[in-house]
Image (cartoon, rainbow, N blue to C red; front, side):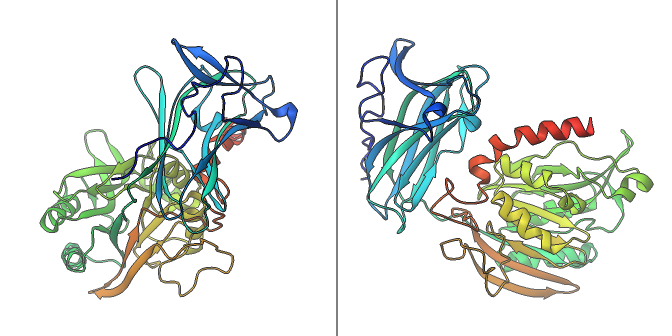
Length: 432
């Protein structure tokens, strides 16, 4: 039985005088002039920790409390708090655990109907960690405003299980009979998800219930696997042509649709393709996925937005693409990319930007862990080349992994949200 006690002394902030720092906690800041204000106060009748701005927009500092740990065990860090208007959990707060060469934290938050936030992070304290560490609560980048932190707790938890998914992607063009054979053989090879390329049916225009969609749906249901692919969709009623990718679940139900946001210029100028305006993600039994299609890959925004929305795998159907972009798209955003192409080769890249068929990763790649992919196989199915690999979504190392996401590059989970603001404003001014 895993013990449930809070390993953080005074994690509910009930010990200490109002107006002072809570007992067991120590305040630190890079320089005194940057230090935010941390103090105990009352809110809704209960003593809480208040973290507030000091009048400077570049303020930064933290409270820390010691914790005793054990290498090889898994832990869960949870927090509950409220924010005054104008503050955001990603930009203005960080909740982290440091232990020797290990670091991690909370990067996903939910807001309830009453406006309160909660967040949780789970992690394994590996061999680079230490048995003594500390919890850190950062407040930053706000001249004014207050965060009221009700409770932070660290508990030992059950080990995190692997989250394995076997993906099949393709290279080459064929007809409906050929794709039927591809899907049958991918299922026989143990695939959980099969990705077909862009314009899988050539340049035929179809409806959302046309031959391509029916083929993907029926084979998904027949083999109890997920199937995705892309074709040109014409909505006769609205007179709208779009380059669409669809995702079908194990029962053959359509669970995802993405319309290409960045059509190739001739698609717009000579075919009248309407660009998409949304970049959705889709929950599956093994994790969260999203799409980018062909020309989307020349832009950073689709992959970045998918990652910010929680995508773990980007499905990339295309007619052709520049393969050397894929390591950057994957590593920049901490995502895996699976590419199926009509003629530029298939490929699967992990979160370090390493292609699963590479004999060795780049000499400058330092994930500090074994590969997160296995059982890589290639096979020929008629005219189509198929690549299969098993990925573990429970482990998402950085290419420069210095103990965890607080110290590692590229830091997509950690700092992408708070560092985009200024540049986005400049981009809007430039294109406005």
